[in-house]
Image (cartoon, rainbow, N blue to C red; front, side):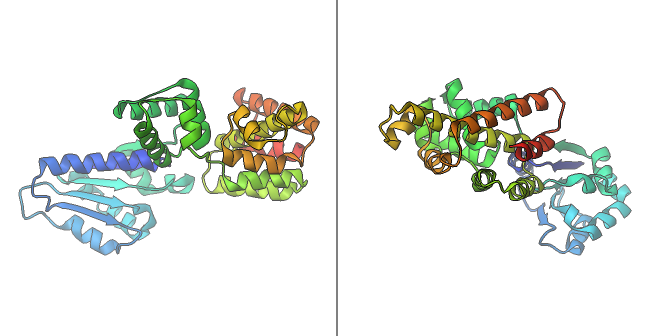
Length: 315
């Protein structure tokens, strides 16, 4: 039996891999025939030799092969032995920890696995899928979360499920019903340092540098919708702080301002540093552009990555 696990969300794919291993260990008590190889670290010949060997026990073997796509030699050898792979009585799991990309997906071995193996792709969760996943994780810990607190948690963390899982564990240990106050108290927002740098560049009219920073995020596999949401989040914060400054009701007290806005101290300190680079009218104009870009993305008029570029260029 061939199993192929891949995709950018390596939290859920790793969890699935561990479930397969645990199930095997329960059914095959000796554990002698579980073999794990990481092709980023192991010579392909060692793996191929293991594939060719028969078990001296009656038990089926479980071979876990990680990062096979980093070993061209092994891919070729396995394709040459396609018939033996398909007829094997052992379970062979091909696990890819990182995003494969379009080039790998055109590879002959990828096509073979996609066709012949039990394939499961783990894409990054967004929107309702992410909310549902978070609620299920909280339910496992006998914990509930208020709707606005969940939205704030997603806003702070994004779809990094490794961190999300850790924050859920921390919050559920704190109280059984999580509210906004708990999230603001315990969770530090995940606003990439480069997002603050990008906004600094926008303020200084360094458009090329701002575009370069965004491009780097995209090349590193960041979701353009997530990046756009972070830009929106921070410009919204700037507009809120600037508006409150103009009201003059806080008497210059940063703690009063942060509390009134429900803003995390980390974000507030960064926002206070940036807010003087913009006038209130400039921020209102930028926020209108954000609204239009968001509308264009949702109606399919423009792709998210193009909307990001256009937004930065036209500010």
